Length: 160
Image (cartoon, rainbow, N blue to C red; front, side):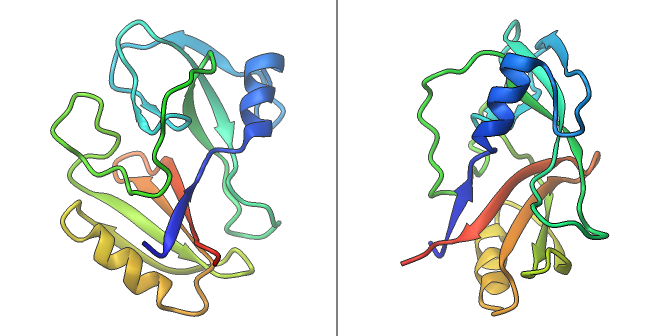
């Protein structure tokens, strides 16, 4: 693979878990999982009864018209789950699958402006990721859920 999944920022996780404040400096919402909420920190769906934090998150570093904040779920307590950041979390017909039948990939340039966007499926996502990263202008890709448009994960080029 020519990319790696960039974990949700550790400073964000510390801030929401310890201070209860999100990226927009507003209080987080704590709740008990109904089951199926997409947990960005472990790249899986929540199990019924897990303690969750719902907070606003920003995966961008630069100001500009495409800088977005969005709601994300993370586990309220840090866990020691193994998360594979070298492989896109394709569905496996498990109740905890992170992605479903379709999602969106948005490619961004060095100015964090959208370079391209594609609706993808598990069958073509790897091909589309390769095609997008073949474009020299593409610095990173963000995956989003289709229905709500929520941030799912960020892919960055692997460095040698």
